[in-house]
Length: 116
DNA sequence: CATTTGACTGCGT
DNA sequence: AACGCAGCCAAAT
Figure: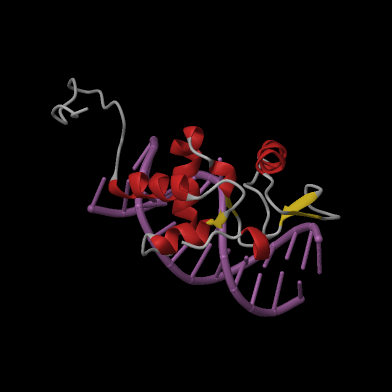
């Protein structure tokens, strides 16, 4: 469906769609189930090193995206979402690894890291 | 336009 | 493995 004009009712913007935001969501959507990518990897694919910027996008716009497939460089799930992410991992069969101190588990990056 | 913020990363302790 | 610190990036305020 054609997206009509980009103009919105004055003073109201339906979605702050920006190039970077859209790109991040697109990359995240490309991550296959059972695999994961680090914030830094997603940023690198976009030609940037803004791992934090990617996290920022996920926090604000990743609500409807497979955010659990984007994890930290250490294999830890998104901060504050370990419990919810774990449910998705077990459902998708993402290779996990037992951990003592963390949230009780940790994603096996060596086996689950997505390779475009 | 300047400052703050944050679902990050790497290194040292 | 846990904690702290500095560096980096884009969006939000």
